[in-house]
Length: 170
Image (cartoon, rainbow, N blue to C red; front, side, top):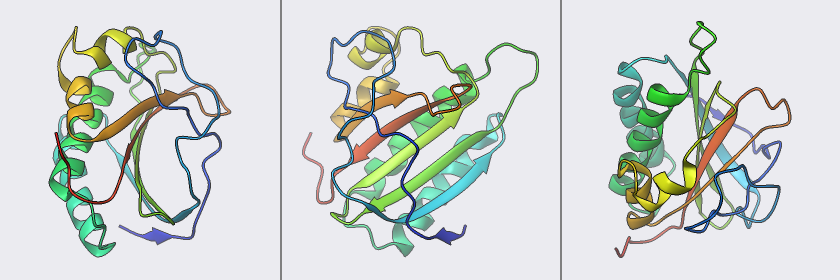
């Protein structure tokens, strides 16, 4: 774990509302204030990624003294990293790694970014609604705002969850 200076992402996604078509969103306002701290972790594209991500998340958010639900954030990281392991390989025969980014904004919002090497996200809308598996659907019930976007290089995708500070009220 290493803290880094405030860095703005290449692009910021708009929030995905339920029923939205399954395509990436464009640059907009999901992040309302600048990032002041971020932590990065590169994960293997294997089943061990989820446990590494959970431990990393708990430790980072404790050190950052983030005032939101660390339990909810950890569950969300688990769900998004689990999806990246299962669906993040574009089928080229070479599995690329997964990157977890935890960032805290000036307004103490938590941004959870999970990037993988598959630039497509078929069925995002159905998954977010819970019509497929319930992992992405559960993010909403844990207080997260879910979106996804293509970075400028467009050979990968990033799934972003924004969590507000404070208690989670399902």
